[in-house]
Length: 126
Image (cartoon, rainbow, N blue to C red; front, side, top):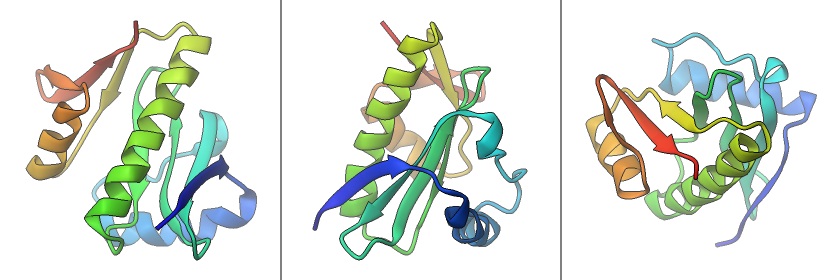
């Protein structure tokens, strides 16, 4: 059950839009082209598990394929967090925020370094 991370390509946008519409319609579609280090994490079938980037204001944006197993999503989340932390460091961003719509996902993020911050979660980049 391998996953790999790569740069987001224009041809990924249609699938990302579908995933966003299916799972995150209450949020505005992320404008990955205007963000830092847009990436896709895909499984061994070359299907998107997650797409993400670092918003210039220090907001981590992930569109997760909730049709994938919790194990794949968990592995992708670790990869995404490492990618986002690297990008934040390079751009001297110390706080990264994640806005979530699911309490279980918020708990999972907190297990990986995020902390409560009013209604947002933040990851402090050392």
